[in-house]
Image 1 (cartoon, rainbow, N blue to C red):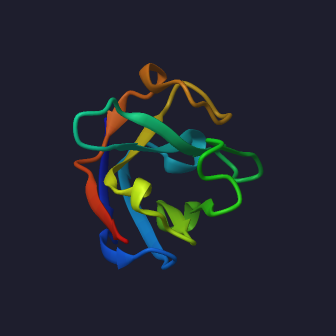
Image 2: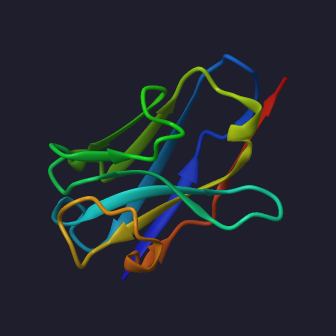
Length: 125
């Protein structure tokens, strides 16, 4: 079992920045890949970014590449999403997810077994 708790969401103006955090507990955090996804109102949940077990490999959706950075601190059992140059279309509930079955990053939503409760990010124009 893995428990995930996100934090750091909020309201920000376009062009601003936010840093999301996800604290994990349960299984050995340093042994599996992690990802961030988001879901806007009336839209399907979509992939944002993912990171390997060691942090050496990352993968981003084209829509956030160059603006968002995923990182992890295995000593703190945490994964982060630094979001810069935010746009109104980034408004969504952001979820972190754990994929204990693999060590490399994946964008495939159904591969992730554990999910946090989500944190709201709202970007005003």
